[in-house]
Structures are given as structure tokens and as C-alpha cells.
Image 1 (tube, rainbow, N blue to C red):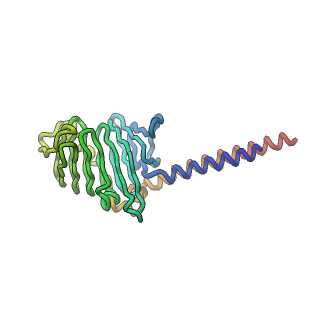
Image 2 (cartoon, one colour):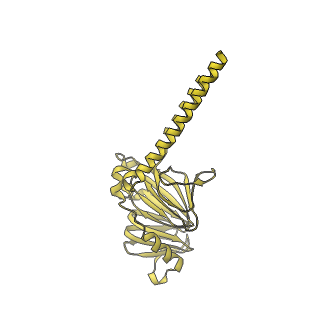
Length: 262
């Protein structure tokens, strides 16, 4: 009986492990300082480089902290300090572009986004929401800072900033701002940026993100130097730990059975 329970428990653990891996859509490529992640109402836990995550995950960074997220299509997100980011939807299958989707929310703080394969081939289904607007990502490398209002800096490509007032497109090299959900976005001179926004843009712009869409050819592991190995290693270590636990329980079950028979 004990052996049967042990085997049943082992099968359940392995099924959960592989289901979790199948659902995962990205990896923490880099973590500096205090970075936490949680899903839904779950209490957030410390995030580590190489760990996988999936839609529904909220990531927060503390003071003097940073997180680099790499998605399976090569899309990269760099989170600045004191930031809260939520991944609401992400779907990617290399041979089914009609199912592509990327939707996320920047609740507070600042981030940089470098589009992956989904953004390159299905830009109309890639968006980032901020309190003041929704940013349509059209194969772009851009940054956004929330210091009320929101500020946008486009490094490459183009983004469309949409709210109740309309849509404004910002091309490479442009700086923009949007004050509220009912105010149209407008261009702004670099000299007019508040110090906090300027500092965040400088910090995020100096992060070596790597190739976005080209990384998609190999999934998240190809997009991040060492991240794929770290992610795979993380799964392997977890699997090894579960296997060891299963072996221990099976052994204990065997000893208990032998003792009972004796």
C-alpha cells in the first residue's frame, strides 16, 4: 500500500513539473538586487536568474534593483528599479503566427522593451498598458517611464500611443509624453524631461539587451547569454531534487513494508 501511494505521489509530482514547464513562456535572464515574482493572489517570492515564468506573473523590483526578462520568441523586457510589471497574455508558436499575442501592464516604474519575433510578424497583437494609455509595439526598441505623466523614448522602430483622445505614433529617436487617459500624447524635447525620467532612460538605454527577433529562432535560451543553460539547469536541478525525494519515499515505503511483513 505504501509503495502504491509513493508511486502515485511520484506520478503527480512529475505531471505537475512537466505541466509547469509547458506553461512557462519566459525566463529571468538576469536579476540584480531585490526582485520578486508571484501569480494571482499568491505571495510573491524571490526571483532568480534562470527561473521560468508564465502569463499571470507579476514582477516587482526594489530600490537599486533590476530584472531582465527574455521571452520564448526573443522579446526582452528590462525592468528598472522600483517597478511593477504584469504579464497578462503571451502566446507564441513558431509555426502558428495567427495565434501570436503579447499583452503586459506597467503598473509603476520604468522599463525597456525590445521586440521579439511576435512583435516583428504580429505587431498588431503586441501591447503594453500604462495608466495613461496603451502602447502598440510595432517591432520596436523603446522605453517608458511613469512619473505622472508617462514618458516614452523610442530607440528603434515605432510605437503607437493610444487612449480616449486618439493615437499618436512615435518613430525612432522620438521622445513623447502623455499626461492622462483623456489627453493626447505629444512630443517633448529632451531638455524638458524631468530628472527622474532622464535618469531612468539613461540607465535602461545602457543595458546590453542583445538581439530581439533574431533570438526567437532558438526561443528564450538563444536570446540570453547563458540564460538558456541556466533555465534548463534550473529545471534539471528541480527534477533531480524531486527524483531524489521520490527515491527516498520509495525507499522508506519499502522499509516500512518490510518491517510490517516482519
